[in-house]
Length: 148
Image (tube, rainbow, N blue to C red; front, top):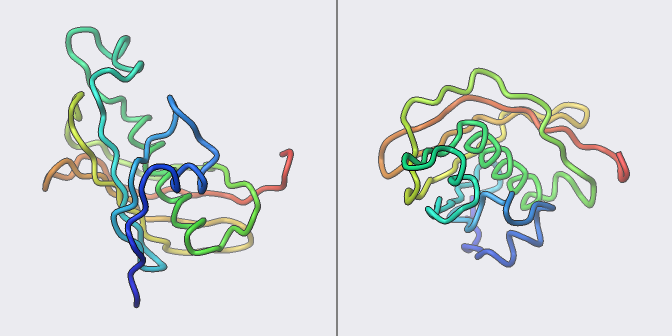
């Protein structure tokens, strides 16, 4: 299957409704129609590190899960499975956080479409820092109507 070219931050913003400080994908690294790899650098100046935790800045697991959900949303947008509709993060299943992620690290965010059924999309997701897996599991996104 043909891989599409890398897309930088401005195009990511055109594909997702999220904006800073709640956009956790900066670059699309690879896309092949059923899988996408993206990345995000957790700069130590991000507002979330002022409270989590002062003097020991650690990326919250819920933020890693959100980054993986946004990556999955990119997969839908790039593969045109969603059209112009809205996508919502519906559920996480068995996401395990196996290593701390600290300020200054860049995560590789991977998502693969596993199943789609009646507006629900199930993904297998994984986050890595360097070669080390930091989180993995599955999540579900749902398509919704405008104004929902």
